[in-house]
Image (cartoon, rainbow, N blue to C red; front, side):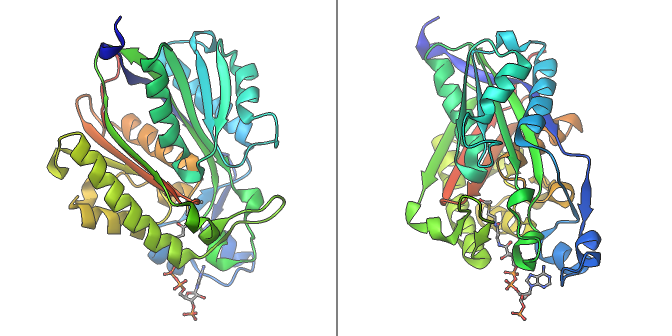
Length: 314
Ligand code: ACO
């Protein structure tokens, strides 16, 4: 097969959330000076799942994606785990996934914070164009150990989870375009030191995210030769529903076309986009032939947008 005709498509998907749920009321009842009403109005969040290790959640989400694809770990040429909360500093969490899922090929982690899954998806597409057959892409984060549970401005926002996709070689390109970006001079507005807790300037993150994703999403739509009316579903990073609404309004997309899962999951970083995708495919909102806009941002700041045709195997 000549590389000029090599594309890729998603043929498997999955997600995993830890069993333990912390509701907004649990946080307020536990002594945090906040309320369910304040959190829901300002963020769209009702609850978060906590307690899973990044490796464990990745294995469950990855296995689901393999099952949907009808393949085993041995059929996978590379597993990429996008995470900023690896279970150990080294080796990468991808090594755990490699062992437990019996991955046939290579394994590596990718760190682009909440944009990680989209960065990894674009990288996987490129690696398939240069010869790989099948890549398992996982976005997974266990943020709860890094949350300062006494800081009401950040404790309300985060949770744990994982989502996964199997990308496979295909005769058509389904990744129509992408836009990857970063502004490293903004890395002080959100960070976590070794042995530290999540520290951020929430208002500045909000402003930067809206500005960056709006521009990036527009770039990706333009590069695909499409307009906003061609987008069937926006699958955004779930950090704050008001951020999603602000971006949707700026790019001219009705909110009914945005997949919103934040009420159940809060922000579990690299996991939010694949979890939202898995949710919308399983509840049959996303249908074959639909055009998806993936859009996210993370500390760094990093951002990533991708326009994809949804074209799984029959
Ligand atoms: N409950 C009740 N009151 C609160 C809470 C809370 N949980 N948190 C803050 N407040 C108070 C503040 O103290 C302030 O009170 P004051 O007016 O008396 O000073 C008031 O509410 C307003 O606070 P703001 O900070 O102005 O609230 P805002 O509407 O900006 O919402 C928030 C804060 C939710 C953090 C918002 O700025 C946000 O979501 N920012 C984006 C954060 C984000 O997405 N981070 C993750 C990035 S992705 C990644 O890479 C991990």
